[in-house]
Length: 427
Image (cartoon, rainbow, N blue to C red; front, top):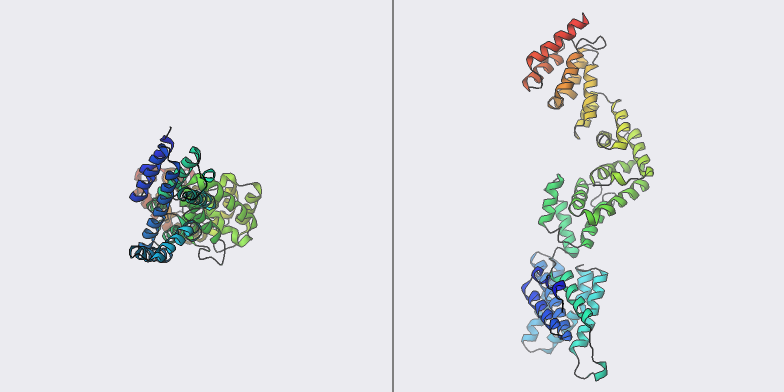
């Protein structure tokens, strides 16, 4: 009999007592004692359920604590010889599948159905004494193996990073002030609380809550940056389970939203892996219109994000060209981009007065001087004697020369050579 297709799950079982019961079920199955195997694997599931409740209770879960107190009470009665304890124990056992699905969300509807069938077959396997011989339950090989595999897969190998309590743990961590903004660091935090082991249903539930909550004014996640960071990290951690789903949600939200809300979705579309590539023309058109026409106080962030998205770059550059140096500096606050640096250089080299040159230098050149590079530094120096501007002799230009020499962008000889060359050409 082939046993490798389920015995490999035994070492993955997390709790000793349920694992030993699962081993007992395996031995019974391999020996042909199918009814005994069903009873053993059902018992393993029940013990694992109670163990999870104990862990949640210790972590402060009120519902789990109430159920553990219930178990303790009927256990004490049983030890004292009180038959009420047995009746209460049976009532609890009959509720285990429902509690697992609805109260704690350890299992989904399909898994709960499998467990309910297992429980029914466990009853038929355990209570044979007075059954007519023709009605004695005789489970088949495939059915018993299915039960053993499913109990280990959906319960014994799973930690308490499942269900409603686990969902709350993820939300609490993501909404914490200490949750990293950097995606790689955020993924590591999520892995520390079990995102890799969490069921698909759990990670999808957490992601759905954050995606829709971020755009629902009645949600505590409404317009919260942590919601975006959390969604991006969840998709990065579980792309196969979340990427297509989240991208589809964002596409639908983009089309449904009013113009004032669309600006909030743009950073999601940029940062969620694969989302930009999956946009249809309708969503692209709406986002392009946003970039071209928005007058929101968040305009500078919108333009900054749009500059890094291919189909929005032209619209963003068009808006950027209409910004003065003070506005461009506000765009810098959201991160630099080659097109923003180009606009900064354009503003500085186009200064018409010394006062304007000083203002432009302070706003858009000084903050990013270390990112200019040799070519842009030379471009600025060569504009010194341009008849259309007034940089010659300005404090800003002299300060610029000193800084690029100090930061070793260009040597002092290069700076003098370019300035002399341009002056000679002007004369």
